[in-house]
Image (cartoon, rainbow, N blue to C red; front, side):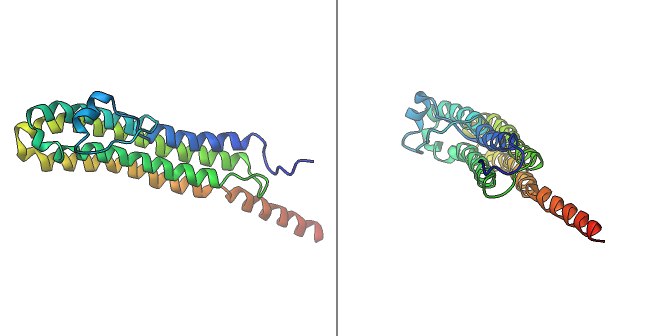
Length: 201
């Protein structure tokens, strides 16, 4: 006899949310030609995903082309690559929160919970994807411009910070949505208790 409690299709949506959070917001391996230019300045780690992958690769291209002209600015211009890599951490946090909340044998897991986890993962993942694209485009153009005009560095950093904030908003909303999972069980218990009290009367 199965000890599964809740809706049997609900965990599919929950795990899909965890996968979406990680897939959309993590960073990927940088092309070898970019690693050659940046190897002395920063060690880039290979992961999988889309948001930070695009941001890291796009910024890396700018750093590579800028490093040919101004190699002394490579370390200073690596900031967009680092900020793009941070996006993957946001997706990892949400994926861990969601996956630890899915245990149908320990507690009932309903479709409400699955949808809450799915929306949580999509909110964080798609926000990370958009932030990664913004960081990549700004980082690519910013490091090239900074090589020609150093006064643009502070402006580039401010734009990158606001782009990174988009992913942070997605993380906050994702945490709030994932915390909604499980409330359906409490509401169901309240309805059952109210029915029992009416029957007792």
